[in-house]
Amino acid sequence: MRNMLSKLQIACDNAVFGCSAIVRLDNLMSHLSDCEHNPKRPVTCEQGCGLEMPKDELPNHNCIKHLRSVVQQQQTRIAELEKTSAEHKHQLAELAPGSGYTRDKTDEPAVL
Image (cartoon, rainbow, N blue to C red):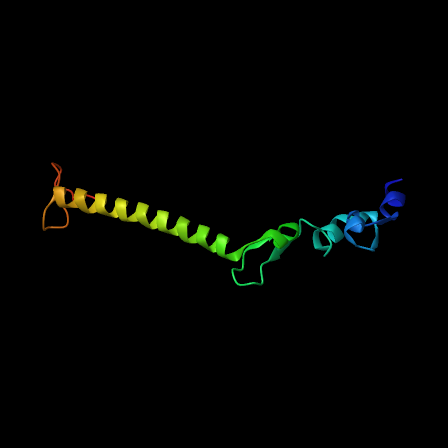
């Protein structure tokens, strides 16, 4: 029974979006992942930003808005890293000003 069903020829699920393919049931999943009419298939913006998004979101995509968001995220991350770096420098300065490290009671070098 399974063999008979796997040979069944059916229309692509994306027929409503313009796909005219008729495929065997056992090949349907493979076809759907590559079907150019699949509205959720990932595509890359070719207008400059290179963002990968579902095909159905491309018409409403705004490169400038996306790139501003990326820049904002990077600025936030840079600020976090600068704060962490400043905290680490302050901690190092408290441990041993000018030496780079200090020794504890066991006479082992402290980990930086």
